[in-house]
Image (cartoon, rainbow, N blue to C red; front, side, top):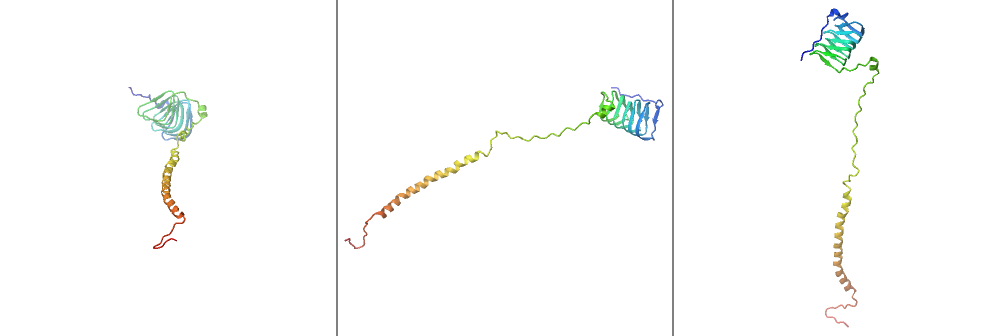
Length: 205
């Protein structure tokens, strides 16, 4: 695959050049091709071509018909016809243009939109993207049909506790039944009337 090469332009064909020793800040508008070799910070808007030199530093929101850069540009770029990035170019920002030409070796960090470019009024009216709401974890629902594990314990306890009482009842009755014959005999002996008492060598008269 052949390497892409962008046609370089002669500086004599450019009407206005901001030299390397110029440090400008503000809003820049022009109707003829312009080249920046120094430093610029602010906003650029033009219907012509903007050239950025290899040692230039531009920190701006740039909108022009053609943007051709060899230097450093920080900010969004809108090229209504074309955007060209040479091998020495460094761009940090989003680019919107229908024709995007890039040489091997340049550095571009941002998003590229090659669809329809909205007008400035529509861009200003566009609502800012809202962040998605944080998901809320639903509360864990317990099934209604799940039986309680402790419900069976109280019903099972009474039979176990009642068993020794039922076994103890006959034993007590048997003890009473064993004691009843002896007690009846003692009662009979005490209740016999007229029992004679005998002594040694005595006679009854």
